[in-house]
Length: 177
Image (cartoon, rainbow, N blue to C red; front, side):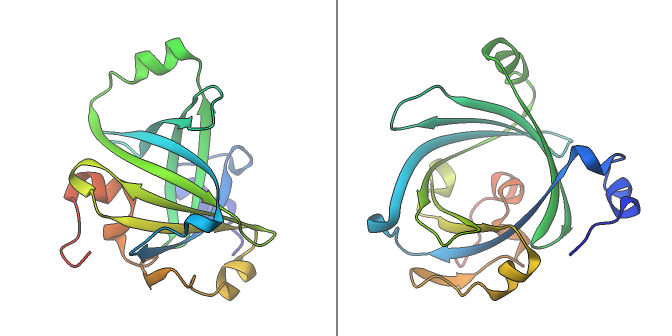
C-alpha cells in the first residue's frame, strides 16, 4: 500500500519524508518457540496520556546500552501505520519518563525469520501476564499478504484492536485471551 501525502497529513504527519511505514501482522500464541530465539530484550513502554506517543526503554539481556526512544504512531489500517521516532540520551529520557501515562512491560524475543521479515514474540508482564503475542514486520505489502500464520501461533489478531499495545495498556487483557 502506498501512502499519499494527504493521508499522511490527515494522520498528523505533514511531511511524509520524516515518517516510515510499518507493515505488521500479529498472532496470539500459547508458547514461545525457544529454538528460534536469536536475541532477548526487556521492554518498558510508557503510553503517554492524551497522545499517540510511546516512550520506550529496551534493554538487551545480552548486554549493551539500553535503547531509549520516543515514538509517535498513526494507523493507516489494521496492518499499516506511520511512525516517527527520536532516540534519546539518558537525561532527556529521564525527563520525559515523568509524563503522565500507563506502563506496559514485556520480554521480547527476536526470532530467526525469512529475509525481508522481522519477527518477534512478546511475553507480557503485570496485569497482562500470560499473554504471548507474535508479530512480524514486512518490507512490502505483498510480503505481508503472502506470509503464512506461524506454526506456533493460535490465531491472527492483526485486525483486533484489543491486541494493540495502546489498547492493552488501557483496557487490559481481552477476556478470551
